[in-house]
Length: 215
Image (cartoon, rainbow, N blue to C red; front, top):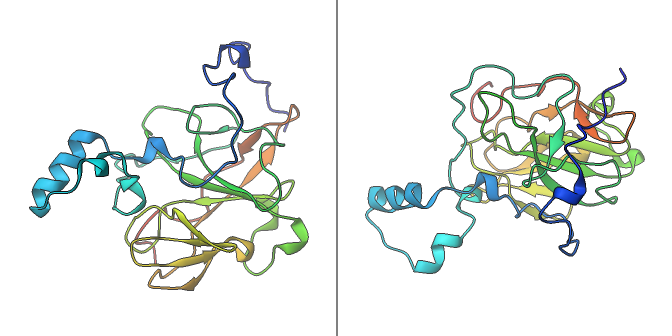
């Protein structure tokens, strides 16, 4: 399928970050998945504890259950672009082999956040239960929401993806299979491809339920 080029309005000259130095993608630049300050205040009240003021800027989304899917439709569908936390579409050359980052579906009605882990490795290193038909140019994408308790899978241990809540470990080279910890199933994989003009897009929704449940 020959997907359309990005809208003319998506000129990188209009991007406020275009003059900023390039930094290596990480799993931690996940601003859209952070709790709002007022939500954080409610959280503190509910547990009856106080923390240092510096905690207000901590990436709480990586250690709390933050994914609440009230929207019942598909998260992705055919032709939905993958974007970073600034809303910029992901070009095929964005990652080098061995790098990872958090991406999202390009904004659409009914979805605020749907964090997705994007990884890139040599195709020869993939195996196990990976759906190679869902990969492209060495890229594979998986839900970032842990299948155990809904926390964000935000840490790394070598090539493994690690959830900081209960230390579930997933291997993206083996289809995000569970390598350790309490999760009962892999992170669902997202089918992706590259458009004729070099942008990553989904070709459907996640292959399984996002987050806890769906055993």
